[in-house]
Image 1 (cartoon, rainbow, N blue to C red):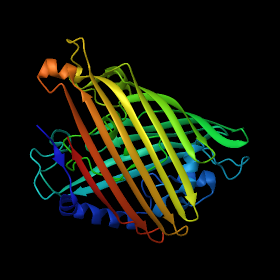
Image 2 (spheres, one colour; image 1 turned 135 degrees about the vertical axis):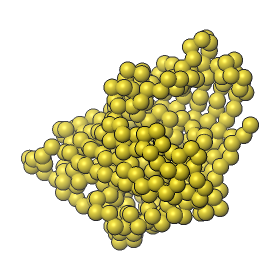
Image 3 (cartoon, rainbow, N blue to C red; image 1 turned 45 degrees about the vertical axis):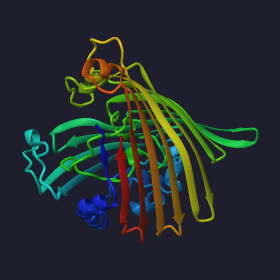
Length: 378
């Protein structure tokens, strides 16, 4: 049995209302998602210095460098910038061409089958410099749909600058709770388009591990290096949180949810370069995990899932106020379903593929319409 979703006609027909609403919201909102005032205060720079359209999470070169250097850049070493705390609230209105049956999150939110207004989340951050070599981005969120308070995206970094063979490098250690949350590029899943979405909207029936299955359900640590402002390499290891660990971070431990055996390695390699007003990045990333489907420990085997991806980023930086950004990613997932074959009669092996490409034009740091093509098959 196969799964296939997404094409131009589906994207335009089903998502034009979401696209137009997103453009209006981004144009009218005073405080935009993830362009945090604590970072602006710390660096004494406007949000537009780091972010495309002056709102997050799309990054410009300065924003990528700020993250690479562990959120430690500061306008004045001797100046006190206070405690780096920030607050953000997001609401949404969701309309779909077909009613959703059953109504999404009816048990918690009391939503109807269509036309839902929701408080999606209220988030607060500790986000900024700890000292000259350590910084953090730690988000806690109240989910207005499920009524839960939980630990959200987190990335703590420690950096070291040096030279080798006469060439500069920046190296760092990251501790984070989701593969790609620490990534510098908006082609990868956590910070990719759609930059904001509603939890009462319909979502794909199938997705890869890289596409958020491990977000806030794992804890990882690793090291990265950027050499000569050209080549970036990173290696991390993640561990799935236990039911107790999930409960401690505010996640809902679900009986029968998949569990992960051992460490989950994650790798990242990218090459970047800026020529005049043009910025290019091309890279690869991936992870590999042993999965215990349904937390069923009766079998001696596990399923094994490997995700491998290629991504690219292009930006045309006409000036500080007008930017064209384009991102793409292709993810191929190999599934060795030894455990599932024995316990549930599935295929012994399978695969899943996802391709996404988006382009946006930010005009005068005010209007940033974005369109995306997406396709998932396997």
